[in-house]
Length: 310
Image 1: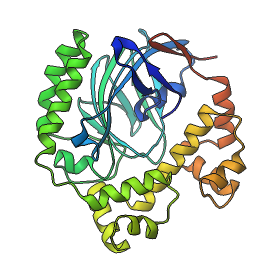
Image 2: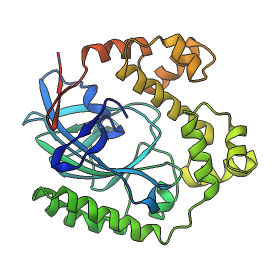
Image 3: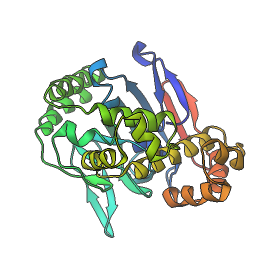
């Protein structure tokens, strides 16, 4: 999502977006005892058959040392199915640490969430559109930051663990792709939701629901009913997250951006409207976020990205 770079590792030549939802966290470090971390990130395009359902597959490796580190995950407009390996992965939940199984689903967030890990943490994930992820897994839709579920996909964990431990990331990704190709063949995809999603993304979340329905060749009532049934959220809910994501990405990549101009560009009523929405999802103001971006921009070095704390 933010700070794109081309990853030449292993000859992939894949355009990678460092700050996917799960590891946007790395840029908002909270513990002052973690002086730096190294992170390798790679993204892989889905097969053509899956592109209406899955945005991409990705692999991430972070080294944070023996001392536990925490990191903040910011909201965005995607859902992620997360397999993790190596160090323990936990989140702060109801006043205590909740260890997370592998896999788990990261749903749409309405505020930042704190995660914890130490030593080496490797992740293979599937970034899905929120209106497709539950149907893809054959699960009932629902709201919530983290979804822990029972599903046959858990059988992939032992296979992926061996491949990741051996450094065979391409083979691990191939296993995941094949699993979802097989799963996709039994899923009835909705052209209406696909058209609605394309319109929402193209408009950066700024399109009114009536126009999204028109683009999907549906009535507003029909679209809203189907959209909520598939994602657990309304069109307006997801559009607001997509628009917030655009603001966040712009301010991180270009922290000197004029906020009033950005508000106009993305269809907010005015700068105050943008600021309210931004604080609602991020917990901070766009100005404070931009100042943090100026201070903590990542340093790219070879295949790794080092996130340096001051």
